[in-house]
Length: 501
Ligand SMILES: *Cc1c(COP(=O)(O)O)cnc(C)c1O
Image 1 (cartoon, rainbow, N blue to C red):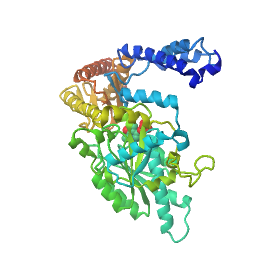
Image 2 (cartoon, rainbow, N blue to C red; image 1 turned 30 degrees about the vertical axis):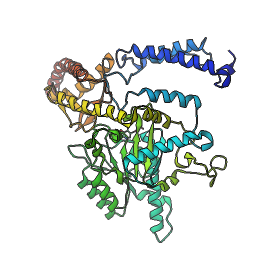
Image 3 (cartoon, protein in one colour; image 1 turned 90 degrees about the horizontal axis):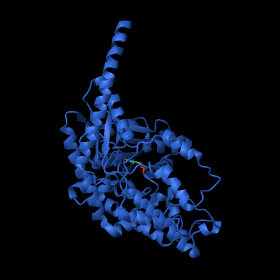
Image 4 (cartoon, helix red, strand yellow; image 1 turned 135 degrees about the vertical axis):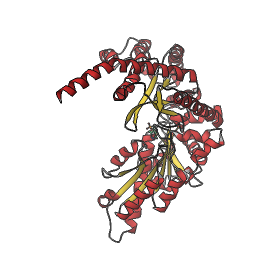
């Protein structure tokens, strides 16, 4: 085949249709045959076949390449749509988003400048405005789509840093430069905040001790008394609270920091308020007013992170950073003569973004909203919140397990407690690994209260209480067998140690 026959253009529309429908046919078949979330394949199982592929010699045909891919990837893929995938913050995706993905791939707009995207720019802007309006950020709000919560948090904290630098420079009598200012800046975030905050501080050139950790209470929400104390301490030491990061939906517990109180304290100390709602943003479309009210106070944020690919059932990537004051986005901008010269007149999203070439991810959310409406997405998110309540009741009533915290959104952290205390950490870790190896279910693991925990992240409305109960039985079985195997060994070890000492 002539290499040019692979180019997508007017003349190859038929070949395109054939290739894509053929691929979709295969995938539809594969999806229909998925029986478990994972096969349990290890890197050692899969690496030899991947390594053996000769990348300098193409497969005999496009079909052969797809056959090969089925073997290398699809057969052992991790399927987020399976009702027993209960591990990380990955949602099953809605069909309009997947359809949108094929549109944006084929047209391949780049959202950096108007002259590379035209109407795509306007669609992204409408969705930014729609989200800002749901957040209640006011008339001057703006924002931009990003690759994910990590990047949204980084961009928000970049804006906060620049605002702080400008303020400090303007207030000082002698001219201050960055090397003098940056070491004085601090970010306050709770001990349950996302690690991307610490990463962002590093990328932004702040000191190693730039992130001040504020403790959480038993409900895993930031303790405002502790925040007030830390802010006072910084003031007493002449340090600058560059930003307070409140988390609306912590990754482990779904807990939502007390936003109104935090907003009050941030305002009093002149700190930028960033709300990381990467996970909790799904509440924006909940059909239950009392659930939307859980985000009360978010309207006071200077910036907000939302991950549509976590709780709007969108494909990866789909995220945005929103700001209360559009002007602050200038800190992310740069005017290049060849791309977006100053005063050009056209709406160029690159002026607001850390990225240059950028996917038209907004298209997927657009098609989803136009097909299902916000209520449709909200109904799905409400279902998983309901499921979390059910799952909590199940685990809480089960003497084999102990719950670490009541679920605030759709995660549940718990641990198996049916064995000797000294074996519990290892038994819980083993149970998670053994379950994954069997492919019968996938759950996450974390550490809370100094102990190894298991975690359900429920984002699939198709998961039922029956699935939860079945996975709990499997986990308890693996853990109990581990404990039984190791209890004898452990007793023997202790005896040897006792004799030796
Ligand atoms: C997942 C998550 C992030 C990071 O988002 P990515 O899209 O994975 O980059 C940030 N904050 C919170 C609270 C998250 O749960």
